[in-house]
Amino acid sequence: MKKIDLGLKASSDPEQIKDRLQYQPNVFEFYTAENDFTRDGLKHLAYGIDQVKDAGINHIVLHHPMRYREYFTELLTPEAKLPELYRFIEQSSLDLLQLAYDKNVQVLIHGSYSRQTAEFLSLYPDLEHAEEYVFKRLDHFKDLGKEHVMFENSISPVFYYGDEALDAKILARDYRLAFDTSHCFIKWQGDNTKLMTALARLKQNIVHYHLVDSLGKTHDSLELGKGKIVWKNVLPLLNEDATNIFEIVLKDQTDALEQVNSFNYLKTLEEKLDVNI
Image 1 (cartoon, rainbow, N blue to C red):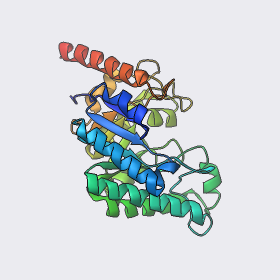
Image 2: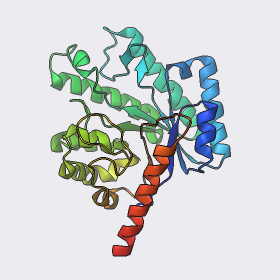
Image 3: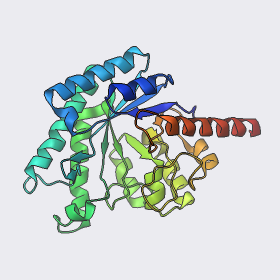
């Protein structure tokens, strides 16, 4: 069974980094935003990476920014129709991948988001064409990032986990995957069996987990144990070689309490399962 990491998430804000480092995590994920991609912003982010590395943390993930101005950074974005958004997605990804090679860290890119997906899908003849375009974009970043890039599942109609045919397409491309448990759970409307099936089927390609609880209805990002995911069934299905963080909504961004609570919940459960084996 996988040894659970104390994986914490923060921006490059010094107060957030200071807070996370006090817990001595072994995985650190940087949540990036539009302002990280100016010349000074990238220097600030690079400094933050060095600070985390100096604290002895070797597993670092850079999460591609979710938004650019009023838009989510959808890989569905067609260059011809939304050139400025397309250029930001491309350049910010290249910037993060350059940091990944320079610093020997990882980059996480979302295959899709959900809140504006319908708007972006309307730019394509049908879902099949949209899906084909997203796979081309993912192939592009896979070729660029190689062992430094991974792709995360959404709850949108594009690039989600748990559908047998779509999972087969993903595995055929041998993508390195980031698996968000809550996204899969919500996509299947709180179906634990679907979640477990997806975890098992994709296990060999998963390199990183976002361990998050949910009630299975909306994107609620709950502490572990406060939703409806059956964690005792999740634990045996996790890839032992993958890393993980706890991507929980925080009441205070300078206090990782809810993330740490989730780690402690899972460690207690892990110990109980070990005793019963």
